[in-house]
Image (cartoon, rainbow, N blue to C red; front, side, top):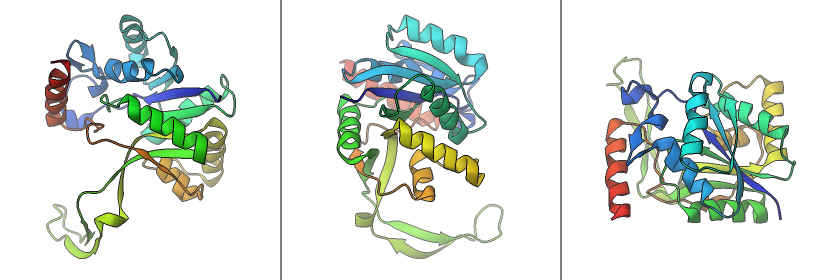
Length: 242
């Protein structure tokens, strides 16, 4: 069976949190957000290795936290890039030197600490059977298409059309591909001079590496973006532990 590994992107600075430290290192329930995320992959029987992409100044902390949380599958810390796209690229290039081409790679945001075992299982299963897997949820709302004017405060935004919710999926992470395809995608992006894409799945679309296949997502697998998200994570974690 193909080996499955996790690549956790933990290089963000979290400016919108207004914190003195990156949000992935905020302590919640006795562990950092990153430790909660690493533990989810540690506990899954099909994950054999965990790689973490982090800025150099935080790598000692990452290694210490992996050790103190008992993350025996921790494999390597990799230098982050200027944005999440370049961080993912750095991670894949580093993994290529250590793993086989048919390895299944689950690329996940460090600040989605409530990823479940079912989500991890679904990503691996869908990727093995169909070639890739993008964690996603059916949209519960319809969406307005807008046009932006020139007003700096966006007060002149107007709606011009709509998109039916039945036609939309809301993407989460992990995004899961075979290592050999990720290597090929980033090589092609280098050739085209692409230095940014919102995510690995949007890059796949830009490059024509489609179709992409949905894997199980969950509302609880949300991204910690604003201060209120930390409070929600604390409340959910307390409820889970009770």
